[in-house]
Amino acid sequence: MKLVAITSCPTGIAHTYMTAEALEMAAKEMGIQMKVETQGSVGAENQLTDKDIEEAAAVIIAADTNVDKGRFVGKPLIEVGVQDAIKDPKALIERAKTAKVNTKNLVDEVNKIKEQRKTESKGPYKHLMTGVSFMIPFVVAGGIIIALSFAFGINAFKEAGTLPAALMQIGGGSAFSLMVPILAGYIAYSIADRPGLVPGMVGGMLASSTGSGFLGGIIAGFAAGYLVDFLKKTIKLPKTLQGLMPVLILPLLSTLIIGLFMIYIIGKPVAAINNGMAAWLKNLSGTNSVLLGIILGLMMAFDMGGPVNKAAYTFGVATLSSGQPSMVMAAVMAAGMTPPLGLALATIIAKNKFTAQEIEAGKTAWALGISFITEGAIPFAAADPIRVIPSIMVGSAVTGALSMIFKSALAVPHGGIFVLAIPNAITNLGLYVIAIAAGTVVTALLISILKKNVNN
Image (tube, rainbow, N blue to C red; front, side, top):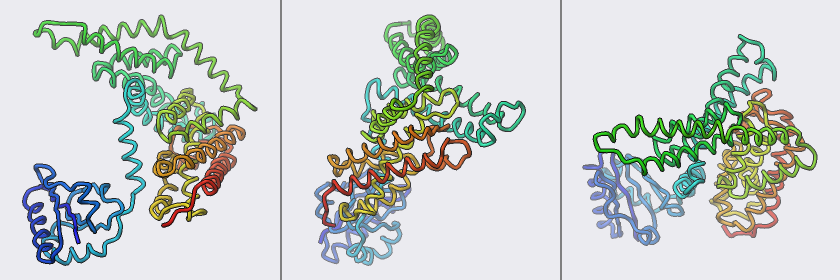
């Protein structure tokens, strides 16, 4: 028998190595092969290879710190503190022989996928997503506060001095007012680092004041970022004056140029585009609304949190900039909830189609789905993309179309099922829930039909 272990203590000095020595000596006396990786103050030593882990009958983690268990999925694993291993290492080794298999934690896996996508994204998409990621908390907080104002009545905020009016001032007048400047500022920040913040945010403010809005903010952010990057590379000052670059030269020149650019070149044309888009969305009905709902649904499910999904989501958030509930945002959130919910349901009604680990992950997928975390579907899709991805796309398209048919409009950009309890946060609530349920059932049925049986 061969075992592998990891030892680690908070200081990474004495107990890390005492534990490793105790385990190695006990294993030798018991005639068991043992390789121990120590994660001490100098980093990981005697690191476990993929081959070591593959050959091991079980894994022992003796640590008082957080140790990543991702490498050991599918292996019997036991986890204890360092003192337990030092006091009775032989008993610990005996326990390891009957340890339970370490199964995948869906939440950890989803978070890992999200982080991986962030690091892998490059170029303009990375810069845009940086801006969006900084903007979203403002939009979510503002949107929920606006929804709380609507809870007193859709027009209650119009009465000055009331609590609904104060909530609208906080959510719509303040948090939402920062949405476009934050978006533009952090797009520029992603491109040019801190010197990009000032012209980016000022450009975003001007986008709001000139009516060019969300689209104008994106233009301002990219223009400011690339302008500052150009100025940093172009302007050469003596060493004695280089301290003036970040505090005077760059912010002054870039803000002046971007400000004039937004006022005289970008403002009116983009404002006209925005007004046209707003009018089209306002008059959207019948076949056009259903088609838009289908397209948004397909986009939300296609890559489950990837560039296509984020494009649909960003479009939905943009329609909230007026502070009023949006049918587009409602369709986007509903369609984004459907994939993990559909897969969770499929693990219940067609257990023979999934491995034991996937069935266990299905329980967590319920929570991810109702929380509007579309990435909860990714591990299932990665295991069987040919059958899973078309199934969730059809289910989300059904949900998006029905949400539009039912004319459900959402006042908040995130929160999943938890924000639906706020009065007036969503119009036609009952029908909206039916739209989500219908797409969930369609997804589950398609997966049940298309997937092959597995041997657990």
